[in-house]
Image (cartoon, rainbow, N blue to C red; front, side, top):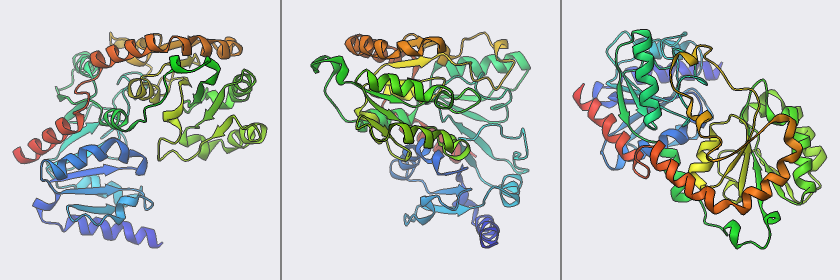
Length: 382
């Protein structure tokens, strides 16, 4: 009851702001979205000298306790207050990482607002996302050329009005590149078996940990590798028994680590190779740490059954065999041997990954600055 009252009070407080104080508004569903926006917000505050409103649906969002006078914070929950917020929003710009605007119950405002989408993954826009995920945004901050090509193709295919497609980049990648710890190269180690393997799959019907996790971890530990397992946050909520099972079977092995706190990088920087499936974080790992990925070839994550209407291979399909290796489910037993081979070829992978990053990602190292300048420009032209 108290939270319900808080949501409506914060909504009213937001609506009573002078128009100039709610020119640029950011909305996040939960604190997990913050990492995709923080660098952009920092640039808006420090370099563009803008004030912003930060609207969240989570009472646990630590930004609600911010003492920075340039950020006004509000919590509107996930229910009726949020619906009203969207329906009657008065602002120059709303920036968000949540797709499907105007498709379900969260509609565009009755008032003129410029909606800007920020990607929370580097993957393509037409297979993992729903068919109409981006149709009702005014601007898309594109990670790379693949997003521009895909969105334009969708507009042409379905007769949609053209959006403003910005060559933005991916600010989270820039943060990883600037903060990741340097460590001993593979080739400087005495043996490949000194490598540390990170297992961090996606979440869904064919979840790698739930269906093959114990076999995969056991094989790697027997081969002498250190193993870090970082389950997807949704697994903690929906399938906690899988996590309990892994912990029960391997917690006594000093080479095994189960990491459930995902708000930080944890020991990701200390790993040498990633094992994943269709997780978008695999691209963040490869392009951010310049280390290879082993993809277990589970069925594709398809949220748009018509994705093949768009004449481009999803980038997460196209790049798999170029930033690592693809292994069939039937050959999981061969993963430990493949790890050794790939560790020994790490320098070749690093060079290829660096080349691909320059080709597939816009503005590496300056994405947040480019994004902030664009957002401020739209707000001032409204």
